[in-house]
Image 1 (cartoon, helix red, strand yellow):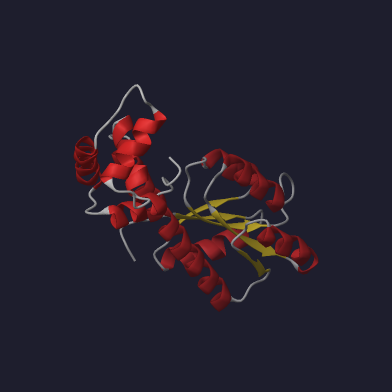
Image 2: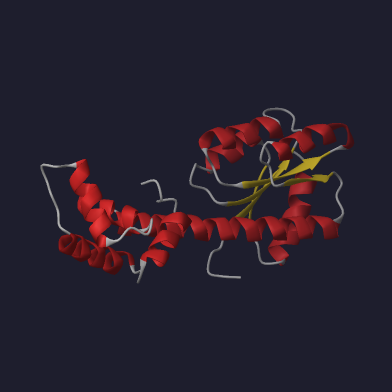
Length: 214
């Protein structure tokens, strides 16, 4: 798939379920970590944790799956959640999906469906991880720009010419007038630092990395 290797977490108070699911996924090359309670699981993850968690909706004693899910959301944790739900808790699982969970599976679950759901969740988690990594790298490049280069970049991405940018920036700060040749130099610096070749590529760079409103 790629070089990203994420954890698959299994959180269930039933040891047989943890062992059975864990064995299945370890045999298929997944990096598996299993926990018998939501509390133990939450001590092992952070807001930066990535991957997929198979989370039992009902666990006794201690936190239920919904409470664990809500804690992950409050942390801003990007882990994707797949709920295991018994017949009586299906409405709760469906609501959890509406609230942002990746999906849910009936308990006991069909092996083929389980493998398919986990594979899709892991593919999504991996793509999300790559995107976040790219955005962090882009932000580091963006932070190398000077304030004037930032102003130039944002206006250049809107399709403004060097003369138009110079006029706009001079109007914003009349005490610091600027000419279009200086803008052309700033623009060259921006392209070099960000690794883009034209305003279209710059616009895509900003859009893809959440920097359009920087």
